[in-house]
Image (cartoon, rainbow, N blue to C red; front, side, top):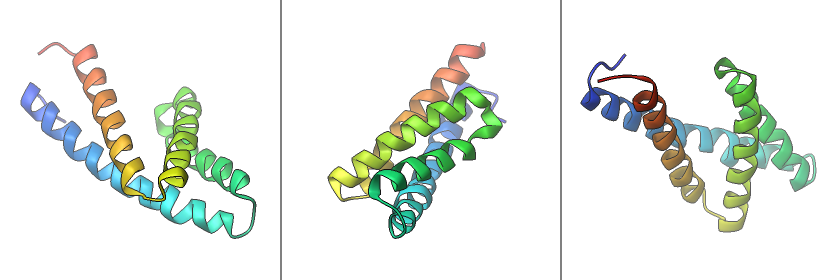
Length: 109
């Protein structure tokens, strides 16, 4: 785990970029479109977002609710833009902000 401010910044940026790209590809570009092949778009958005929320269960129940709601937001951005890059960028920025607030809000350097 990172020990210095610089390490925290680099760690947060790297993890946020990887997570933002991979999770949007999995949960929006793949799962949302897959589920939509069997159900309405509304159901696909809700179902893929709940799975996205459950993916974050290791962070606690509160995070499941939060990330489910964020999944709905990312899905709407994806559907309105027609481009997976836009929700990836939003996802990355949210993760960077959250990561930095967690580390710098809870640690003394």
